[in-house]
Length: 81
Image (cartoon, rainbow, N blue to C red; front, side):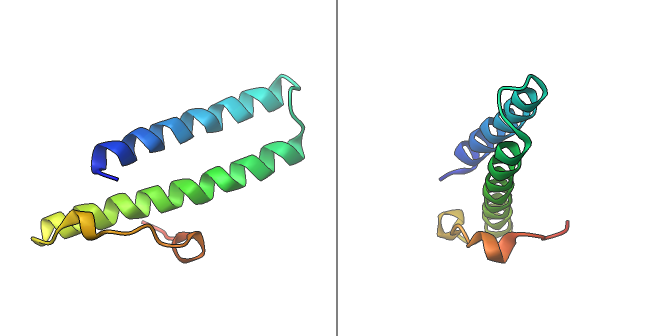
């Protein structure tokens, strides 16, 4: 996945996050469903942001950004910038 694809995916997930919150507010889904789906979205977002940071760092230091790999959510969850 290149940088533009990652950014497009991040944007789509943020839109999904908003849609989930709207669905909860309008009563289309319950809180448990929202929390479950939001949890997965947050893990996926963490992975995308991590991949984007890896690609940018590799580019900055003259390495091939295509060598960056998605790391397990357990590894990237909870990173603080």
